[in-house]
Figure 1 (cartoon, helix red, strand yellow):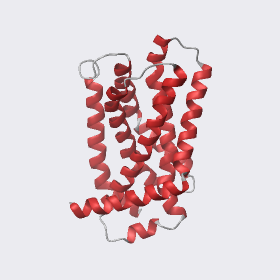
Figure 2: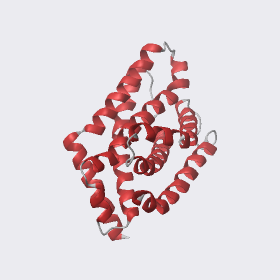
Figure 3: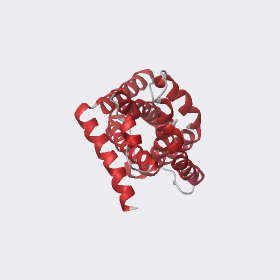
Figure 4: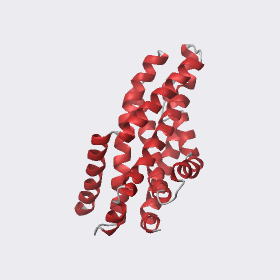
Amino acid sequence: MTGFLRKAWAIVWKDLVAEWRSKDALGAMFIFAVISLMIFNFALDLSSVETRIVAPGILWVAFIFAGILGLNRSFSREKDQGNLEGLMLAPVDRSAIYVGKLLSTLVILFAVEAITLPLFAALFNVALPVFALLVPLVLGSVGFAVVGTIFAAMAVNTRLRDVLLPLLLLPILVPVVIAAVKASGAVVNGQSLIVDAGHWVGLLVAFDVIFLTASLLLFEFVLEE
């Protein structure tokens, strides 16, 4: 287990260092999130009550589509630079590659979310219960990254990968998006996450566990194909 985690961490470190130097994915994701929030802000003239109702949907629209931009860079960078074959030839378990890519995607996504939340609060003049939001944010982000990483690996070897990835990914993400929006909405509106949105949190946990297990088992075949 220690060796597995060390190999996965090596991939995470490589991806984060490469991203820190280029800032391609992070910059694109941040700009998209900011533009999305500004469009909603100027298009909708909302009261404070209405803002609390639509806030979860606006936030997750920004998070999901910004995250897809990051996923496109996750494996395409390896493919364009000829590193994907090197990863496949490395004497490591394929699932370690998957876990490393998953974790690096999550770190970048969490960074974008950490910047987007206060920006949303400032633009829409609403106070967000950040600590209470961590549960749906983390569970929803994990579900997005779990599925997105394996679909990014599927799409990387196609010529239309930038178009194919969202077409494959978005239908599978419907349960995650619905559950994350509903759970986040309960928190924003002052409801109990356990009492009023416990079934949505349960759906997020079940989705994460099921698709993480399936992805770990299938990633070797996806990468070799």
